[in-house]
Length: 465
Image (cartoon, rainbow, N blue to C red; front, side, top):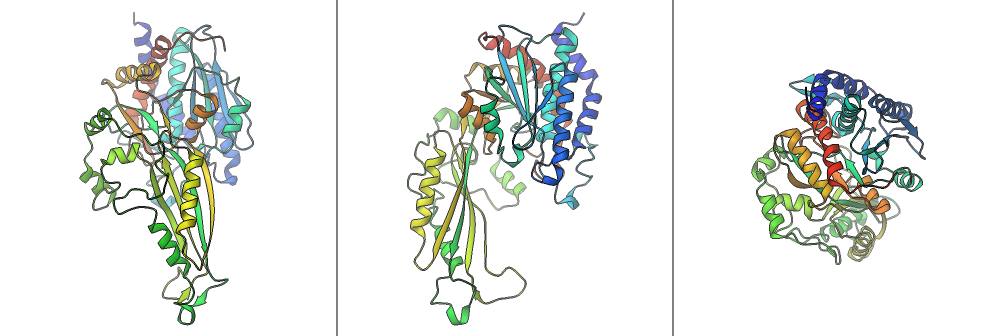
C-alpha cells in the first residue's frame, strides 16, 4: 500500500489533465482589474476561485471590498496546529497589444509543454497549485496537518488600493502564523529558488511649467527658459557619473551586502553578456562597485519611467513648449523608509530646478521592502518542500520587483512571509504570450503538497483560530 505522501503525489499525477482543464477555464475569464468594463468578469473570476476552494474541501466565499472582490476560503480542522494564510490574486493585466499574441490571450493554448494565456502564471496557475495540493490532502486523508486560510485578491495588478483596508477590517478572520505567497519566479529553469527579499516602491510625477502657452522659438528662444531643457537639467542631477543616486539622504538605512551574500550571488548561473544580448542592449550598466544581481535585488534604484513635452508629431514645429513632464520611481531595499525617500527626492527636485520655471511635484506610494531570513523555520520548511518537489535544494534569491500585499502583511499584521513561486523568468508576465511551463506547474503542486507537512513540523503549535 502506498504511504500517505506517496498516495497524494500519485493522486496529483493522475489528475494533471483535470488541473490543466481547470486552469484553461479560469484563463477564459478576462479578469482585467484595470478596466471598469471588465468588472463583471473580475467578479466572475472571484466566484470561480471560491467555487474551486469548495471543490478542494475548503469553505469558499466572495468577500467585498470598496473595489473588486476577494475570494476567501479556510479549513480549520487541526486544533492546536499552526495556521498558514495563502495569498494570491485572480486579477490579470490587460492583454494589449493583441496583435502580438500567437493565440488569443483568453483562449489558453498548450504548446511545447507550456500553457499560454493571460493569467496562466500570474497568478491563476500558481493559486491553483495550492488548491490542487489541498484537495489531494483532503480527498485522501480527510485532513490537513495544518490549518489553512486562502485569500485570492482581485486588485493586485492595479496596486491593491483596497487591500490594506480589507486586511485591517478582517484582521481577526485572517489571523495566522505565517503567510505563504506563490506569485514569484525561480532563478532559472532547473534552478529551484526561494525568494527572501522584495524591493519596495515609491514614485513621483514632476511637471516643469514655463510660459503660459507654447511660444515661437525664433522670437522667444534664448530669452524664455525652455521647460524641456530645465527638465533635462533636473533629471541629470539625480545620479552621478558612477551611477550612484546623488540625492542627499537617499541611501539612509541601506545595509551593505555581507561577504557571504555576495558569494552566494556570485555562484548563481548568471552570464551578464548573455543577459544583455537577450535584452537587446550592448551591456549591463548601473551603480559602480556592485554586480548585476546585487544591483537588481539588494540596491535601491531611481529611474525615469517616462518624459514628454513639446511637439511630438511628424516634421518640425519650432516652439518653446509651455511645460515638460517626467515620471520617476524608486525601488527600495529593506530599512529604507518610503516617506523619507519621497521627501528627500522631492526636496532635491525642487532645489535642482533652474530659475525661470515653476515645478510641480506629486509623490505617491509607500510600499516598503520586505526581507525574510533564510533561517526562519518557515523558510527552511519551504526549502525542504521544494527540494522534495523538484529534486534538488533551492537557492535563495531576491527579486527586484514589488508585491504590495506582501509589504502590507508585514506592516499591518506583522507576519513573516514565505515566497515560494515557481514561475520562470521568461514567462512574459504582463506581456503578450504569457505562459506557464507545465513542468513547473505540476512540480509546484507536488511541492505545495509537501509544504503543508513541512510547515506543520517546523512551526510552533498554534492557538485555536
